[in-house]
Structure formats: C-alpha cells, structure tokens
Image 1 (cartoon, rainbow, N blue to C red):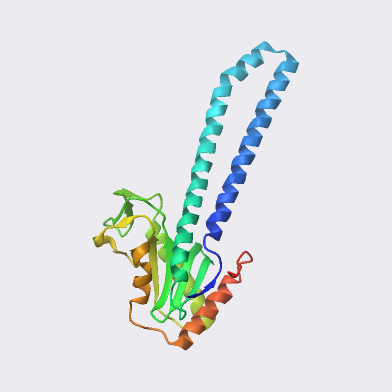
Image 2 (cartoon, helix red, strand yellow; image 1 turned 90 degrees about the vertical axis):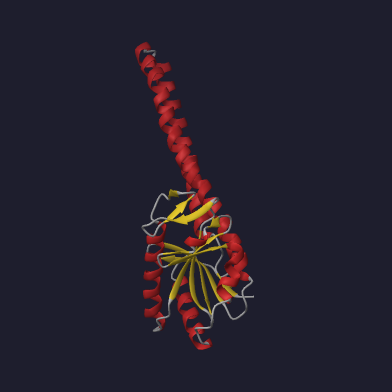
Length: 244
C-alpha cells in the first residue's frame, strides 16, 4: 500500500458544513423577521400595515426560497464531491508502497484533491464526481453532456498545478514534470477527450493502471525529496492532519 498523508474530502466536507450552517442561519433569520413583523402588526392594530405585509410576504418568501435553494444545491454538490474524492482516495491507497499520496492539499488558488509521488512521476488529481459523458470543446475546456461547465475547469486546475509546482521547486530544489489529472469515478470520458490542454482525463477504474503503467522517471532519492516537500507544504495548512 501507498504511504498516505491527509484525509480525502476534508475541504469539500468543510464547505458542505459551512453551507448547512448558512442554510440554518437563513431560516432562523427568516423566522425572526416574520415573527417580529407579525407581532408588531398585531400590537399596533394598523390595518393598512397588515395589508402591506400580506402583499409583500409572498415576495419575501420567494426571495428567501431562492436563496435557500441555491445554498442547498451548493451543499449537495460539495457532499457529492466528498463521495467522489473518497472513491479516488480508496483507489490511491492501493498503489504500491513505493508511492506517496497526499490528500486535500491547500493550494494558492483553491485545493488539490490528491497528490501522488512515485517512480512514474508526480501527479496532481482533481476528482469530478460527475455523471454522463465528458468531452472537450475547441477551446481546451470540458463539456459535460455536451454543455459547458459553470467555470473554466481546465484553466483553473492548470493554474493550481503550476503554482504548486513552483512552491515545491522552492522547497526541494527539484523541477520534475507535474501531470494534472481529472478523475471521473462515475462518468464516461470520450476517447478523443482523454487529454484536454495539459490535463489528462481518466475514469476511476483506469486510474491505478494509468499511474503505475508508465515508465519510471524518478529515483528513490528524488521521490523522498519531493514527498518531503509536499509534506512540508501540507503542514502549512493548520487544518491538515495525517491519516492514522
């Protein structure tokens, strides 16, 4: 088994919890506002104010309902992402003992779901627990069931990979090639879209063979040096904990 640092899905789980707390707070505030206005109007015995309240109440409810729906959708998306990262983490745990895995590494522009360092190279993974068919457009971005994603996934991930590489190079003095990978535990990746820009797209069941099946590029000394640098970088995040 690979040597593993960190827990899979920590970042998205934390984000999901924050969304839940925001949802609770929003509902709490809505209850306070309605209760206060109702109590005031009953005590004031102002019929015209009561009528205004009755007229604006549906608009208030619609506003809060829309916000609640948005937060809940984001929360479910984070929870789904946590499940996908756990699946990817399980696969990575089964890599040979010559590999190191770092889960949930905090990066300059977000986070890296998984890092793998081993004889075949250095891999930075972003798990997308999407359903359907994954293809690429003509601009080097992903399409999900033929439709553009909400944000430029390839561009954003490539930026995180490059910034992380610079930090690792500073820490260990080595400059190995970093391969970015989108992992899809549940989706189908079109054969023409297995490489989008500088990022490879791999389905979950092929991930193990994808990593270990490549020619060796790094010596044991290089692996230890790069792994130590990633460990130092991970521990700069106060929320990072080694997997027990």
